[in-house]
Amino acid sequence: MTERIRPHLGRFGVWRGASQVTPDLAVELEGLGYGTLWLGGSPSGDLLQAEELIEATTTLTLGTSIVNMWKDDAHTVAASFARIEGRYPGRFLLGVGAGHREATQEYARPYETLASYVDVLLGDGVPAGSLVLAALGPRVLHLAAERTAGAIPYLVTPQHTRLARKILGPGPLLAPEQKVVLEDDPERARAIGRPRVQHPYLGLVNYTSNLRRLGWGDEDLGGGGSDALIDALAVHGSGDEVAARLGEHFDAGADHVAVQLLAESDAGLIDGYEYLARVLGL
Image (cartoon, rainbow, N blue to C red; front, side, top):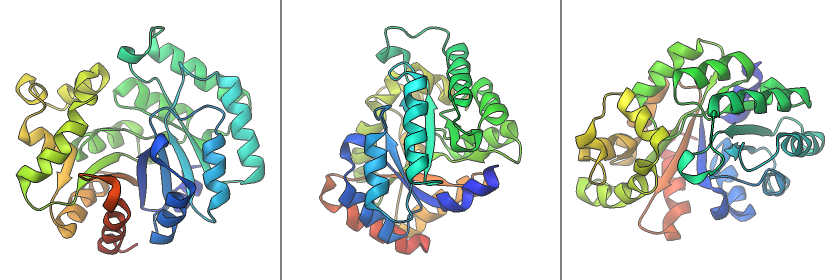
């Protein structure tokens, strides 16, 4: 079923916080050749924003990264999916996940709750081929492989992509997110990337636990993140250097990479994505 999805996603997509996305931005990114726009954070389960962005564009795929299972009722989300699929078949990919225990008072038994949430979505008619999970650890990666189209890991490295591919097997979709800073100077690049990694991600146990599984220790996770960790999670360099770093995810087994471009301000965001699109050959 994932063979049908991959061409629609394109090789590269853009990850952007839902509150920072407008129809005009979606139109511009589509024009630059990006295949998918991922709505980050916890976009509303009514999916009205995703529908608005699909309506504004022609071929762009919209994905959620992610609808938070603690925030939105699964029956409501399934009905929202059906509405979009009825109007724009094949242009929406529903990404769901467990969010973070630090932000959710009700957080308990996340794996079991997520598995039940997936059951409801599938039972209400969401096709497995249109559903992906925010999976980091082995249990949720197995769930993604067995019940959905695949996984959309966030804040990961090519090392995680390689391990995730081994767990998923060859069939399921694997679409990691990768932060990028288009800056040659390492110190300036880290000054941009470190705050975006440190807050909130180095304070969230699901991410730090995953990074520990990959071999990062206390010295890397403390103090805003070691230089090595920041360089891995927010890759920097010239356009060609960044393209090579993104290519490492594909070498490790990714089907698609969601690029989150970081900059000192949003003023040059589109220029940065335009430059990167040229380098990537979009």
